[in-house]
Image (tube, rainbow, N blue to C red):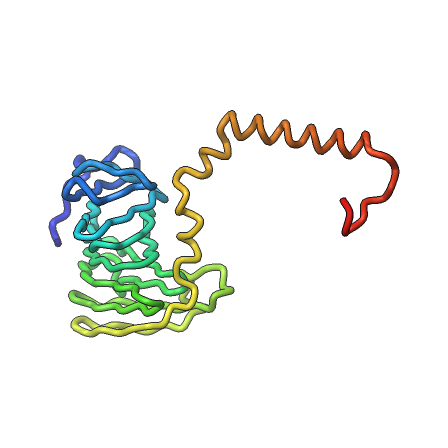
Length: 215
């Protein structure tokens, strides 16, 4: 798990990585992918039963267990549910809703595991120490330690936290390429047509005021 591939093995995009698997049972943005596939910032990764996978990127790697859903991002992995193990020498963190797990030494080698089951986040530090920062649900930035309750998991230790807002970010990602669909020509045309109908309705109707109970 501690083997890191050279930079040339990864996509040219600075936000890219390689996803490796057994060639089946692994989805990216809802689509099946081959045994080796490029992934990019904000891609949604899902592993089905008995189908683990592995993310390889410069300075870090992550082993994703079966039946896990997460979002790949350049500086963190946003875990919706399931479990994964992370090796990093560049401070790669894992976020589970309002809980963020971050290496204490961002430039040192760190190996840690994160499990999210039934609203409970469990962190085990296998090599070096990691922080656990927990925030309130209404907080805007779960990654700012100044406004969070911080705990530390020492090497060889394991600690758990309850996560009351896990998955809040991920649910918006369940529809793959939603932004692209909404920006497509069909969506734009439909939106323009709807706007025209509403405008005509507003201008051509009689002068009766709009009632809150009778539009």
